Length: 341
Image 1: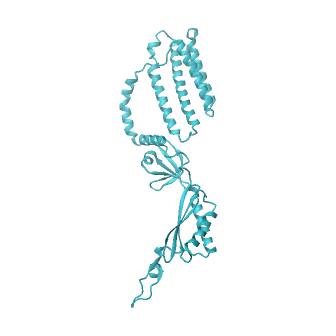
Image 2: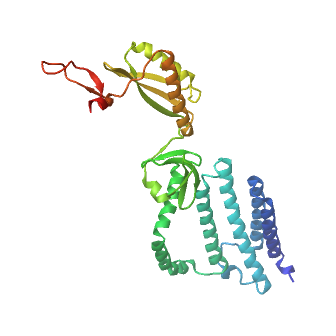
Image 3: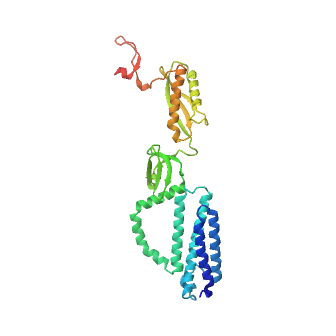
């Protein structure tokens, strides 16, 4: 029965065998899976070519001599060929992502490419195998597409914003970002519609991609996660500035939760009759270390000030300066603003 249609039977067997092998191959070995897909696809293409049936011809033009069971075999063979073409192209896409070691952050773009491939293959099967006019089908579905597009306007905005963010790559999964409104956290998931941030309070913030695309953001993980911190302090002006500066350098060198490269700095910024103001600049390994590092630096400063006879001074806002003494006023003095009330 099938002797006259041996090439078609062979194509169908190759196609079905390819599906079975593709299924049991698994996704853990993308290279081996792609090689198998290419072999089966090449074998099916060769048999189709030798039998004179080309999958990209319209159905009625190349199946006039095939009747009965042979016609069904020819259609199934061409459908299987288009399916294997789609899987081969998808295999190349997934292999590229695996080789680039970006399987997670490229998931959105990968899904979009896979959807386009499947859509193209579905239209090709509809037009080339079943002979349905694709142009007429597209024109008929145009009105439906417009209605659906208007109904899903916000969703489509999120989708295309997600694609733009994926292509622009302002961040990747695992990066710690800070948004213009002050929200900050680590990127833990990106989907078609939203991006998920894990905040320092261990909460998940879900941001629609369209909203995220409009916000200014700072990627705290680039070029690396080291962050510069500043601690402002005032030391009573009872010692010379260089005598005060040396213990502060010792404080920064002693702290274990700050990184030593780049080296921490002590900057004297102002001086008055009451205190010497300074800024301590130091880096931490990542955003999660900021709180503990600041606590350690403050505690170490307090202990070093006690050990070196230094006193912390109040901020300028805590003092009120009385005008010089006159015949009707007592002698000028500096006092706490709370005492003046």
